[in-house]
Length: 208
Image 1: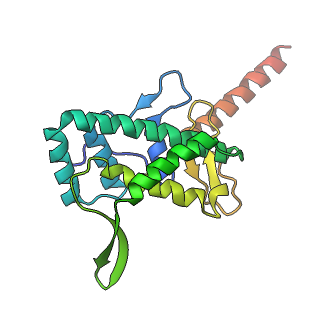
Image 2 (image 1 turned 90 degrees about the horizontal axis):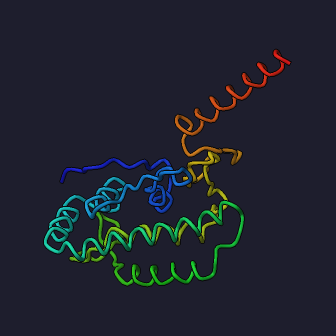
């Protein structure tokens, strides 16, 4: 299967990276990255929560059931916005809304109903039921969200400090001081903005 789109996984946790499939969330024109079912599959393959054979089966199934596939994409966007509200609250050190947690509980119950044990080499690991459920790419995202919310490391969830970004990420820095989703984009832009502000301030002083 050829992956048609590359997603930014710098968030460090699958559920946060999924939230970031809406780019420039805080800007005037946010960019939607999930347009069709193939985008969901591409995200899951890149995040390594879906293997190529199953990805091909689901892609073929989506092609034969376009209405159902489109419905799953709509559900995925609703889930993404639910996760954004929950983890944006966590990043702000606030309690997530109770109704949002209940909605996530519903997603979690549906996902965990498809869990099974798999033998991988000499080990037994958690896996997902093989089959023809088009919602399969969403299950690991829901599991990732539940694991992060119940983790002792939940305090490392951050929201990018750039006013027009609002991407979420997991701060792995030693002193928990990371401010930007990506230093090469939002971080550098902030540096340029500060430099220009200092220049304008110096010009005002010189002409005063």
